[in-house]
Image 1 (cartoon, one colour):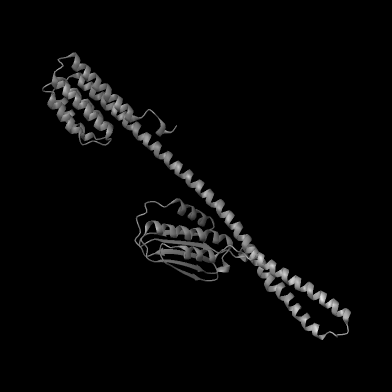
Image 2 (cartoon, one colour):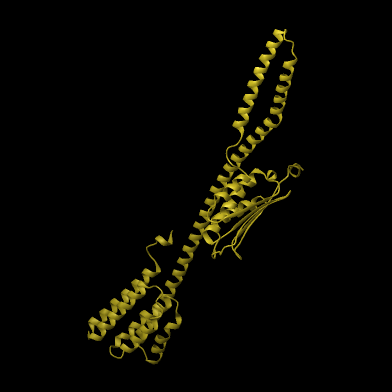
Length: 368
């Protein structure tokens, strides 16, 4: 059951307890002398109870309330029962030092047995409501944490689904680019070479051999049509969407918050497709955090590629605000990087710095 939607709360029971006490004290005033001192005293208790209901942590008035009750008891003897309200609130709010005036009063004033009983009742009632309130707050905190974890898992699931789609798209684009290069570099060159050779052969044919020349011209036309078809296929296969290092460069070029110095070291063709799908959101997350929490004048983005690892570093020279807790984006990225044997870390010691390191898998090692 959701504690926040529960109608019965410790605060409401505390208000009921105070209201019943004031009602009984008012009834006592009506059935006795009903002097003006008692009326204004009860009115004072009502006002202080309303203040503590409105301002939950109003502890500073507890001692003052008890001093007023002790003082008024010399003019209206039943005013001593007003100590019960402050005594109860001191226990409920867990400000035990505030009960000292009431304790001293009942010890040295020779209070009657009824006051002792009511004070003990208020003590146990305050302890009960205090424990209940603590348990309720712990349950609410636990539900909030569970809700946050659930939200984080849902966000991670969405990120992974998006990453899978992105990897599939990048793999398709990469394959189309590879086929386009192979056709252009191998088959295309061979066919064009054959076409040039046939052009040279055309000049060597005898003019009176009409039948051979006609067959040759027909073959040349078919070859020309074939070359045109290959050109169209290469053009259609060439990827229009930016991918890999081009995507990172485009992100840096489109970022207008501060100028970015983008440096690349190493052979970007050695980076597998699935790593680009992590490098891109890592760069986005780093730039987003810099834009939200800093006053950067210059941003540095460095991509280092070695035969074994790829390392992305995003840092700035601006003042970074204190980030109390990492966002869901950073947490999800760290989980994805860790799942492939890498590491993602952030540092706010001097500006903001995000470093993402991932291993490059080799086909040879995989086969072994």
